[in-house]
Each structure stands twice: as C-alpha cells, then as structure tokens.
Length: 179
Image (cartoon, rainbow, N blue to C red):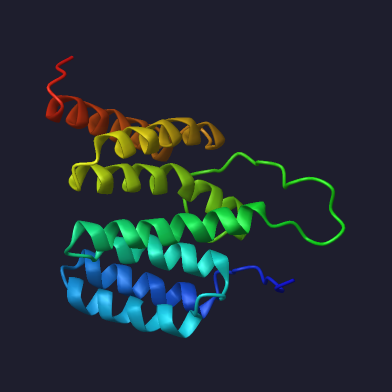
C-alpha cells in the first residue's frame, strides 16, 4: 500500500500550489496554469492524494474551456474519494467523518479533503451546467447539498449553501422553471 505522509504547513508542494493560486487571483491565469501543470507532472498520477486533489481543484479554475475545467474537477474528486476510502491495512472500518472547521486548509489531509467535497460537487455541477448537461448538474447539486453537513457552522458552510442555491436557480431558469 502506498505510504501516505501528512501534509503540514511546511509542505513545499502546498506552498507552491498557494503561490500559483496567488498568481491566478492577481490575474495571471496563464502563469498560474503553467506552474500548476508543471507541479502536476512532478507529483504524478500516483503522488500524494491530498496534493493531487488540491492542485486539480485549483487547476480547474485556470481553464478556458469548460470541458477542461470539468476534467480537472473530476480529477480532484477522484483523488479526494480515493484518499477518503482507502484504509490502512488492518483497520476494520472507514475513517470517522469529523466535523470540519472552516473549509479547505493546512490541517490533517483527511479533514481538509472532506472540506473539499461540497465545493468539488458544486464546481462539477457548474461545469455540467456550462456544458448544457442539466441532469448531470442536478445530480452533482444533490451531492453538493448533502456535503456541507460534514462542515462546522460558519461562513464557509453558509457560502457553499448559498452558492448551491444560486446554481440551482440558474439551472431551473435555463430549463424554463421559474420559482
């Protein structure tokens, strides 16, 4: 079984991901995408699941084509699901779902990955909506709507719920359903 290490605040990969995110937020989308792409190739398809999830989650935001954005969001979800469902040898049950404080951040990778799920499902729903696949978008919205319950009350949880409601309205309006 792949040996997993815990990501820490001193984690160089997370630092580099954070630097790319700052470039993106400052408006340098192409350089952010280039740095994340180089880091993705460095990590590799079997690298640390927490790193892969985090990187793919933010790489999706740098894409120009909605199909590419969906591909990256699906990679992030796949990495997160793989990490959460893996169990160390000799354990009888899946890990307990802890309540997560305020969204993704530098803490135990399992907790941080669980905080990504609502956002990942919401992003995938938005990708499907952009690709005019409303049934797929609604299915992901249902998953996104169920996910915030693992989060502690707070701005992050409420912000996700509000974003889910806004996307649901947008999808309903596009389908001709008016509230």
